[in-house]
Length: 284
Image (cartoon, rainbow, N blue to C red; front, side, top):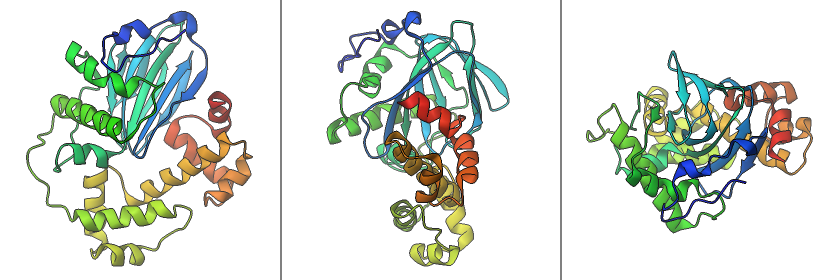
């Protein structure tokens, strides 16, 4: 049985590792706006190459997690942390016959930027880290999946993850980026409010008060992905919620604004490395 992390971080992350508990399963924990937390257990190949529009920060609980990232094969062992940047392609598989398990936090890049006081998003070139005892203690609330995330805990998790990224970043975080942030946030909110609707580029330009080239460039700088991909991921968020409530694949695809089930399934696998049917089976 997986043991619970204490909020004070007194329990070492390695203490969660129990190879006997490995199963093909995805557990989605209580989250909040901008933060999603998951525990996953797999054996053999787990994920085909995919990418998402969030930072993904996880810790291996058992086994060896192997993944290809930025042209190299990486291996994350029990107790180690792995960090994946938004829009970076990666896959995932068990590094040994025993399979692997991990907990992971997906956090919106805007929360990271806010927690760091603005400026460019941090980039971690070496994605596998050995955490210090102090870092483990600060990260414990993020990986305590049994505890709901209220506003105070949300801020605690965001600052802990932001500080980890900043400390490991290969990119300076002190130089302020000249971003039209209020305009970019208006566009982001417009897309997020109705992801099933395809807003025209002219409409987004009017909302931002920026030309299309500046909008595209600054949106990626601020949020780690393009406006188009941000919309697609929000559509897929809706698909996942519908699937968890038992909706058929075709109905979920149409409700989320995809042309058909095939289009949705293709985008789903690109985003999560799993087919929607396999994801739904593992998440129930």
